[in-house]
Image (cartoon, rainbow, N blue to C red):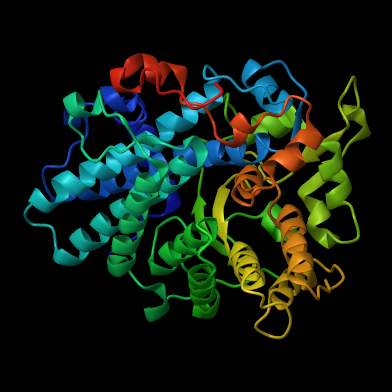
Length: 457
């Protein structure tokens, strides 16, 4: 199937953004506003589905790293003060925005899955691929949604009447549904390892992308053997390769290491807006790197991963420590994209899965995988003789390697480390913050959610 350049994707998104097709709350979306009546409608709606995924990208970073111990509040916005001081409420705007963008992705995927099988004249290859992409995007959205909010509504239709009153499903049921979607997508997505292309577009899902998400899925589920297996398949595919210098991860878009990445252009650069990373981390300095993260990234153990941050003494005013996150630039820079998955994460998933199976040393052990990343970062090799040492090394390495890529809070919760780490970080930490609240607006809108707020909120 043909691939559109990123600037065309951006152009089409700019056109559709004037319409409410992707913007309203899920319960208010109108089927008639998405047009899928004939073959030429397929590509714009497909692009709309990926644009919905783009809407999830910044909130993933905010949830994953702002909820954890990576930031402290430095500005004036209530939403980020709540995240920085660990006093999150159901009225938090970031909490609502992430919920809406998850369900926007689900809605557009549902629309494709409902309508595309009915459209005549679409060639079978295109139909199969686009339906698989819709399943992938929906499965990914539900996976993220379940680990962010816990029990959430399972929306499988675009019917407004049905969607207005859907109750919560259990987190386990949501994750089972997500797994079924991801497995179905894996079967039908294109296989980049079977083509002669020298590069793979990380904007679009393929079989290796699905395997990467499944590796993360099984890691979170503590199915160590499956996590190791899928991570190994991604690594061994050779479709993606480690960049030589870590600084390129910070300063460049679409590197050879990128497995799933959302791109931006001049018309929709994420440098401005309430939930734009460059605006929050650099422009407004609404949040700044926490002091202990700075110490970690500037340790000998981190090596060149210190290039994630920079220091400017001119920023040292009031409580500002002068440190800045460099991973998210503006439209005039070559690092304004958001990477959702990259090859380094696969080595860390495999290292953790191997350590949990007591595979510590040797070529098939956790230490070898950790040292692949440490060698790239020009950091000293790690030595770990026991399972506990190896798991501690993996946790530290995830901080060094993946800082501000949206993993920290999810990692602490899934490993059972949140209470110990976060209570030492903030006196306001409470175990209820191991999941975000259901947005208050959603509870007010959906009668089936009334009285169903997450515990403690």
